[in-house]
Image (cartoon, rainbow, N blue to C red; front, side, top):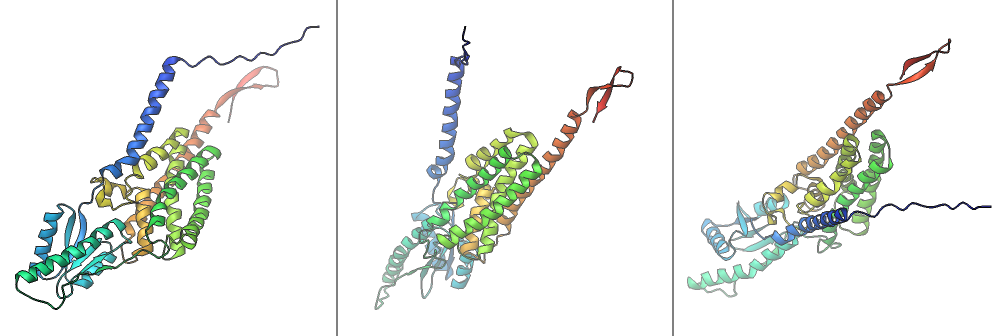
Length: 362
């Protein structure tokens, strides 16, 4: 009695040329990722920071010249009629801070806009005081006490997030969460409409959940909870809908749009961790046209700058979401036409006289 042996045929070894090619491709991918995430930090510089200066014309010109000489290209000076005007410009995010001259000199900062710039302006206060005292001494003016220049944080960060770490850290999970929803929906769900419904449910639930975590638990977000939840949901939808839309249109290969467009390109130039003026221009401004940058700016403005205009970031995230959903709809109808054409095949049909006839099955 003979026993049958089952043999398994092992796949052939990978050719050496393919191994070398895979190694080179992986090295290129890693290099691109390192450049994408390191480039903004390495190339960033404190420059062109909008700064309001209010006071007598002669004093304003003197301070601006002194700052331009000691820190070239660091500030972009903006005129302010008085302290109230300077505060208004800070609250509407036209400037990051202000210097008020006159009888009561003062440096105004906004740690909520940027802790880095706030520290920079706070360091100017004692230098400005020394300059004013030296000018008075040169004029032979003697005061009972030296002139002091206080630094006032006009829009401070919340006590629950004094360094702004929570607000900054929230930006990347929004990008990653949007990608996760779009990629999984494209892989696990068949049908463009079903994918759209899935990511819609996902972003609504995630919007409320993340807003609850970031605002109710961590205290990183301020302002209205429902509005913050809506901003988070729309940012997630902008990313996930784009991935689902492209994948519905061109197939699973379209899933790659997420990592390439949003992770490697848009996220590094989002200015979520530093002022957009610090990035090489025009990339700081370009980043605000993508969901990661617009979403981060929107959450910061909603939390700390209710007087700042938010129409642009709302339109950016809504626009990306609308384009993504439109692509999904187009992909749905294209898929329907393709299925209908593929079903138009000829099948044999048995007639009453037993002779085969060709009929079109639809």
